Structures are given as C-alpha cells and as structure tokens.
Length: 53
Ligand SMILES: [Zn+2]
Image 1: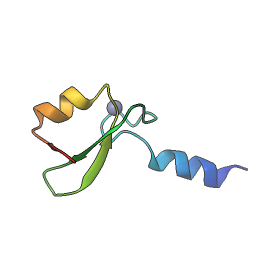
Image 2: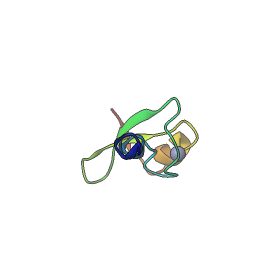
Image 3: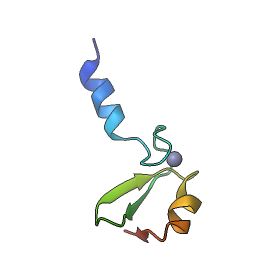
Image 4: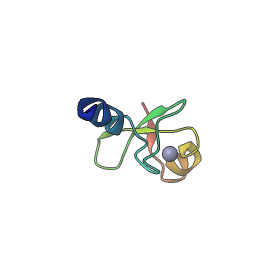
C-alpha cells in the first residue's frame, strides 16, 4: 500500500543527505546533472562548486 507514494517521495529527496527536501535548491553537478539539495546541504553544494540552477 502507498508504494507509489513512497516512490514519489523517494524521488524528492536531497542528493546529499537523502532526507526529504525542505526549501530545496537545484544545482548542476560536475556531470551536468540537475540535483536537488535541501537547505541544510546547500553549503556543501557550494563547497563542491556546484552551479546554482
Ligand atoms: Zn540534504
């Protein structure tokens, strides 16, 4: 039950900590992929020099 919902939620997780996305920011990583990062991991993304989308 709610398998589809779980899958949907899983797709909306932070690329770094894999927690639910909260106030997320999209970044482009070093392999040109768009990743979503939660506000807690934004400093980490900045350190990795990911570009803000
Ligand atoms: Zn995160």
